[in-house]
Structure formats: C-alpha cells, structure tokens
Length: 322
Image 1: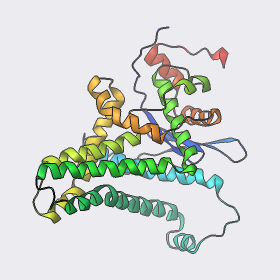
Image 2: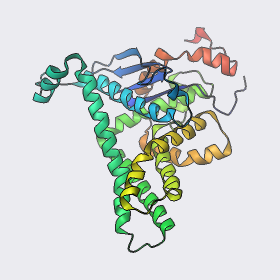
Image 3: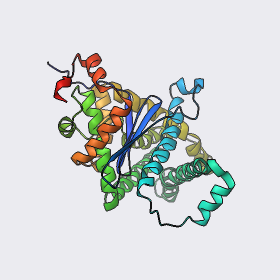
Image 4: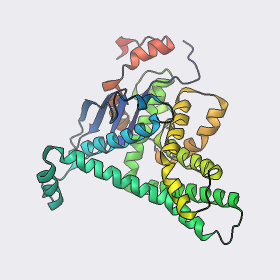
C-alpha cells in the first residue's frame, strides 16, 4: 500500500522521565519506566487538568495558558513517580519531608509539586524575561533608537535561552533523558507516518517533532520579541510590569502556533517550525532499543495505534506477524 508522505495528527504527546516515558492521550496518560531489575513498569492514570470542564479551556489563545500549567503539573508528577524506582531505600527522611508530611498529610506531595512549579515559573521569568530586560537597560545610553533596543532585548533573550539549552545538553547525567526524549518523538512520528509500531520502524523514524516542548519554548521567545517590539511604554517600571503581564498572552499565542504546526504541513508552518526542529537536535538523542521498548509500552497503554492506522491510512496490521 502506498502511504501518504504528510504525517497525520494523532493527538498523543508525552515527555521523557527518569528511565522512562510518559505518554498522554486526551485525559488518559501512562508512565512506562525501566526498573532497576530490567522489567518495564507501566502505570495508567486519568488527568483532566486544573480547569476541567471550564469554558476557558476551549477558547483559542486562552486555553494555551492552562494547557501549559497542566503540562508542568503532570510532568512533575510523572517525573517524581519515575524517580521513586531509583530512590535510595536506606536514605533517611529529611526534616523538610517530615514537616511537609506532618503539616499536609496525604496532600504533601501535591503541595510540594505546586511549590516547585511556582518556584520554577518565577525562576524562568527572572532568567528569560527580566534578565534580558535588565541587561538592555544597561545599553540604553549606547542605543538611542527604541526599535533597535527592543530588538536587542529580544536577541539577548534568545541567546540566553539557547545557551541554557546547550549547557543542559552537555551534562552527562541528562544524556539518557534526552535519549528517552528521542524515543518519545520517534514513536509518535512512526505512528503519524503510518508505520506499524515496532522497534525497527521506530528506530528509522525522526527524533524531531513539531509539537515538542522545546519548540514551544523557543516560540515563546520569538513571540515575545514581536510583542515587545510593537507594545511599548516609556516608564521603565511599567515596561517591566508589561513583560510579566504579557506572559499569558505570549504563552497563548505560542500554544496556538505549536498546535497548528502539529496538524499542518503548509510551507509557512514548516518555516516557523524550523528553528525549534533545529534546537531539538540538542534536546533529543538517538535512543537504544530497550528505550524504544519502554516508549512503545507507554504508547500502547493509552493509544490504539492499530485502529488509528486503519482509520487514517486504511492499513490493516497483520496480527499473525506479532
């Protein structure tokens, strides 16, 4: 059968965790982890999101903000789950752990995840939004043109982000996570290209994908350059406040672009997606076969890829070959 060259939207997405993969399909997600004994543990749960059922989650350019927060929350939860398989059983409980457990009881983990999210977001805003603005203020006496100053701030922001990604990619401990990240992308690309989900087919698939979180973050940087170029105020404190206030707007626009990229192969979409795809060469690595097996287990726990191939490509999987 002749298959279509353009990929089809499957709706599934995920992320790499410690020695594993999380895959999500609608409200259902699965975490597959390669345990220290070599076995694959798969946990399947439901996650409706913090604003489940609210009309705001359906409004374009607004839904992206809630989707981003949900992704952070679920990402941290699944990362903690995967890390639990590699915790030192002999390690003593810290004073902080005891205090949290005593104060919040069964909700201690949720509270800790929430605090970690808030701290991470504040740190990200400080590094990628406020720091470039502060550095640009130092250049105001040398650059008198407001438009050039706005562009300079944007360039500094993008440089800081790329340097951050490069620095993380050089860490030896992060290499296996990036290999699992590659396995996640390869599985989704394999399915959306109309191929059977086997280790061999996944291995041959691309490790770059247009819906990747790396691409989303780079889009946030690029969109911020455009918005801050056209939306300006003279007062330095007002400018600072504006940068923080527009973060939800920037996230909402970036989400709609990345969402469109996952469903369209138009030339303009490919051009917009290209920088993120290039950056993914740093945040993904070629996975080993046992990592691909983990990714396949995560996909199969939440997604019927055989029915998908039949419906989208008219391709019946030969069950006798399995």
